[in-house]
Image (cartoon, rainbow, N blue to C red):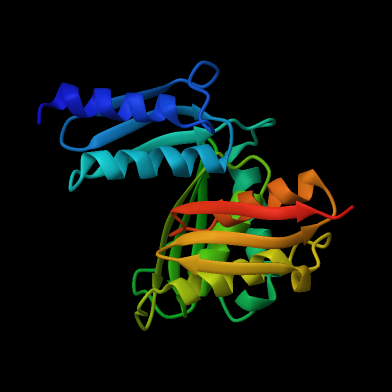
Length: 230
């Protein structure tokens, strides 16, 4: 398969996806050593969908993800770094994690380092579970001014990933949304595809629930069947 055909197939698939508006937010596709996606996208769902489309079509070719969210108010690097670090430090699940200002010469356990450049937040360190790794990324995405997250956190000891693990993190994340009644939301994950069922109070809450799921690394699709209570 030629390079041009891969680029063309990805572009055509992006155009067919109803969630992706290429007229307002063009995405450039380049195929060299890897398939590179470049551009600004409307939200986290569009970013994740575009990457999944590229993975599906490119096969074993690597994906160089350079898609950035359209940020309403960009923040200076240090301000964004401090905001993300502060959010992580305030999270009860990370109470035993040590925030390091510099990368350690001899890495220990339970530490993290945050840096930011042009809206891209990088997370580095060692955490105790996949849930911690995923939650840290969600908190970074939730921080205003974040255009992308480069999650380089390592899990020690290593864990095997699963649909149940993803479902557990979704529950943790949705419980942090004060407007949601988590008892009214049913979560199922099958082969990394999330299904949401139940009741929320508004169409905005319905959208937020799906976006929260898209913020979780490892989620391949979100089937949003939530209904707005009348």
